[in-house]
Length: 187
Image 1 (cartoon, helix red, strand yellow):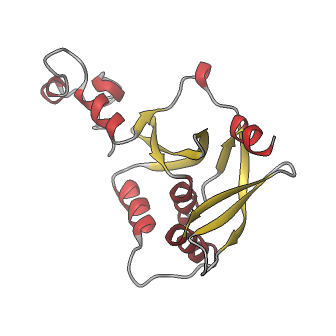
Image 2 (image 1 turned 90 degrees about the vertical axis):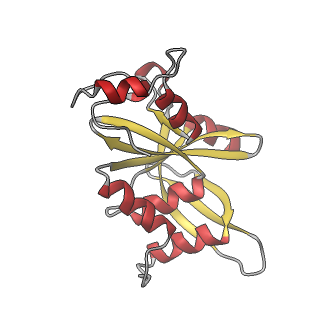
């Protein structure tokens, strides 16, 4: 989902075309933004303000381990300007998708991550990067950051899907991991 032209997150007027009838329909009877609630349910959030910015470390895809006898595969990210490596357990579909992209294997028809990248780009979004931002109850959380109409929109994603999108884009998107997540995992 992308933000409508002329509207900022939460139904507030931003730069662009003024659409009063459309923006009026975005607010519920209590005056609360329906757009904001819909975007939140879809896992799409505005970028954090500078005061809330997460300290992140740039990583790159280092290894993919695909096992035909195990349900979970492993991708390793390596710190770009350091020595730390970061393992993530992922599913076979995502591992295969990442592996195909890294090896430049083309599919005769678009796969799921190809479809997502093409859709965002056709709708005028510009991919910025992916961020693995949190670790809660043994589950990693990531965001895919897209520039749309001058605003950064963060789309909630599984890290495996975020990495698959990163390697589907040309050129590949930067991958960041929050320092707090690295500290929790690597000690």
